Image (cartoon, each protein chain N blue to C red):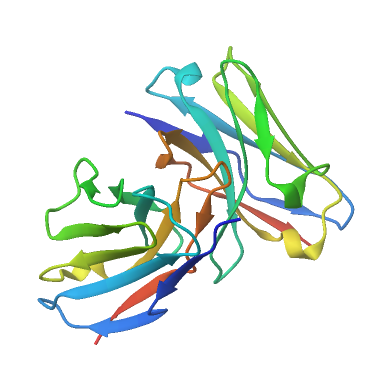
Length: 107
Length: 116
């Protein structure tokens, strides 16, 4: 199975900051990379698909980039509602695999 | 609106089976595969498998082969995931999620399964 490695595992930031989360695949996955946001006790929500396409209704402060094995999720001008956990997921192979998550906390 | 609604929490003994349902609404049920993913407390996600509601075709992660069965009822737009021979390590929140070209774009609210 394709392994997905996210970093950092946790991150502290303030409202208004810009943060970047990275996701690395153990082999090339082209642009078959999605990002999700999860709040405690809730189901994940899709943010970004195909490495850089914004899902409907997701604010434009969220952006994604990358291809092959290295990907990033950037959140500009952090808002209070953005403090959550973020996961990447690859869909290059039949077997979906996920990163371990990055918990974004308020500094 | 498009939504997936799952059945309620379950508590099971080791060795038992659990069957979780996922009812779809707001879209054509047979047009999208449904996947099952689980998340143990404080952990990442583990993909379990998928079902094509139109054909009934399934695909399971190797780890769960022989223990998981996914079925559906097209008249009620419901998919079921049954996991047998439960052990404590199966304690987790189980999610169904609709897959659209590799993207899990709609998720159920999750079902907590506790094995103790």
